[in-house]
Length: 223
Image 1 (cartoon, rainbow, N blue to C red):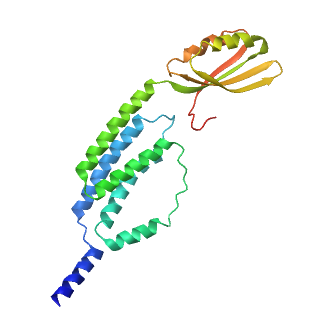
Image 2: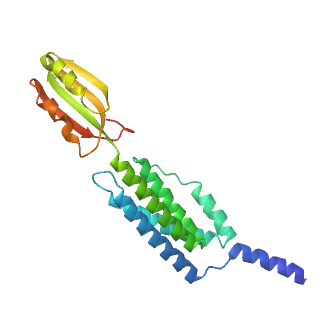
Image 3: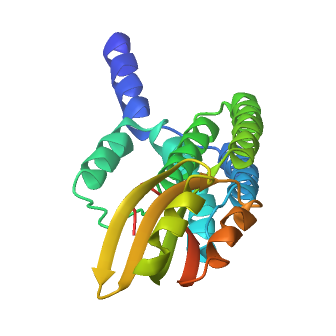
């Protein structure tokens, strides 16, 4: 009888489990601190014009909710099975426009998982290492050339002069050519540093050139 009772107690303990308040608070605090660091890295490396406040709060919320969920299901087999079943019917239809945002989402989730299973020191050290390395790579990429869209509108009489001036520009590639009457519009992909936009100034000085537009854009999406 004692052996049967021991087996029954083991099964009951496996399916019910116990969660201490201190472990939950420690997981939440750790995930919150790491999420704040992730948010700082995200703000420092954000390339857009207007940063979404809701997405910033989402990173913090994701880390904390994930740590709480992992802490809960890790000590209770029944809850873990129920959580898997619940998540299997959830469908997320919000489109993430920037691939980097997806990376930060996964980073926040992984930080929450490590904090939830109790790997506090590893979670903090790995987050610091990832953040520092990513900012170093980002700083290196910023110093390199950026992609711009160069749009030139001019009269057909200035065509030869425009072509001559284009040979003096950095690496560029013709993307579109539009001709309406005597007017020509050329669109180029061009790679220059963000602080060297004055290299296109000679184009505007050509007689017959109506306008020269330089537009920054992400080549992944185009315009």
